[in-house]
Amino acid sequence: MNKDNLTRIIAAVLYAASVFYTTHDTMTRIAAILVPIIVFFIVRFQNKNNKNNTKNVNKLVGLAILLIAVMFLVCGKTDLENSNKAAKVKKAVTTNETNNEPKKNSQDISTQSEILEKETKSEESSTNNEKHQLYEIARVVDGDTLKVYIDGKKETIRLLNVNTPESVAKEEYRNVPLGKTASSFTKNFLDGHKVYLEYDIEKLDQYGRTLAFVYTEDGDCLNKALIEASLAKVVKFEPNVTRYDEYKKIEKRVKQNKQGIWANYEAAFPKKPEN
Image (cartoon, rainbow, N blue to C red; front, side, top):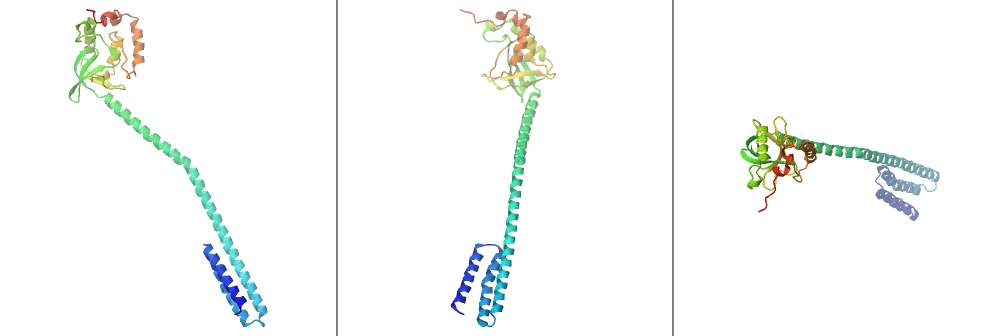
């Protein structure tokens, strides 16, 4: 084997090695491996029949080149098809993710809405159960204060947003006839009834009394009834002002009749006398 043929074989081997390690396609690797093998056999055959078989060698070389070209063409087509398939798969995945994203967001929003709705219903249910829990009356203290049994203990209830004249105050000057009238009204209103309580923002006042709207089983509100009877004025219990505007409208209407506390406001709520 002469130097030129050896060079050809080495070049073919290097080419095959280069292609083999730079591609991951199986067909391309096979074609690359066949190149030095074919070159080797051609060179060997050429050495044996250098003169007499030149024509046959040329045919073999042409056949080898054609075979290699066909194999590379097939490999290239396979790579192209694989590349196109990969591109289509990637596009399909991307499109699917894009289409599903709004649905996912929509599902997330829907789930959050359902959770919020359940929490709201749970809170409303809890509030309604508490509101419709009936309590036995222990006694009426005065027109706007009473005691009820809650969990077996006496609790003082101060009516929200109303103030009646006094009847049992420590300062004697504050105790007036209309205070006893208001106290009697409350006793008669609640006589024979159990009550349920409705709260506003803050449940307790500075004295530890429970602030509430008091209802009978029939749904009649004592707070409102005292205002309508002109036996209570409307007052703010910040921040408990849910019914304040409603009660002020009733007060404005009944004041025109000048009955009860509105017949003589100063007598109903006397100021501390000067010594």
